[in-house]
Image (cartoon, rainbow, N blue to C red; front, side):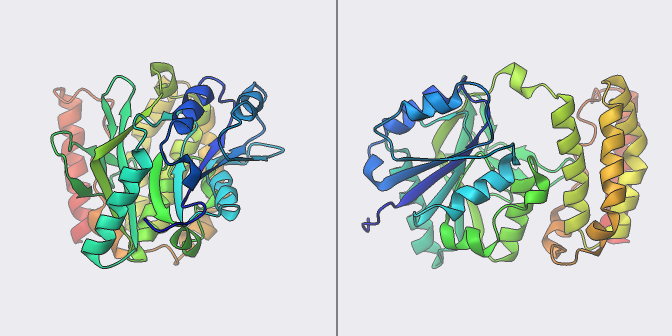
Length: 338
């Protein structure tokens, strides 16, 4: 391996992360090639003991960048990359553990193998992401109505292509992250990695998951719970992402309008209607900008866009699901073939 100082810049935003940071930083401290790594943490104005925990790890080369407010995941990562010195950028979260001391040696070896095999360094590679109980949370992903769905490759010990690189963990050369202008900061949090991945594909960057490498994502059942805050950004960014990337904007808009009654029903049942109205307000205020944005339009998104995922909350054996599934497939055909 060529000598760079540092070779890798690990970058993650931190916000009230005292539950996770000690385990995260302890696993980084145990990495075998620590002298080749810099760690950049962007603190989004935490009010807990996050800063004290970070400052207690003296043996890690940590650059701590404090923000006066919560600037979101996307902007924080961009700030981190702007200050990074590494040849490679590794984007991740505050709530992960690197279970192998050779994690980055393996990941860089995987990157360099692909670089040699594909005759290009336009590559993103990420590990398999597991919950702490070992259950696979993320492997390969494809685009669908809700943004993405996972494809199970748990029985494979191979490097596989993916359409979407998870913002939880991916390695890319810094020059290409910068060429893509990083994450779109309008997303704040959620879907910024989907938007980034689609734009990376347009630049000719191939994206992979190495299923032989994994890391743990320390999320509890409580973390998976959909809060009002999460619901707003999930729904706002889902609509924005699909409309920005589709070249069939009129069809995309009609598709969303067709299923909107079901989203309203879900919002009412879960007491998210106030957030739903905030989503409408944002979309109306930015409607012209989103529809007129031609820079992100692409055939890749329209070709692979699927209608699956919209009825995950409905019992698949029920009559309502069968009726909705029929309309889904009909609309899917209309979107792609008419």
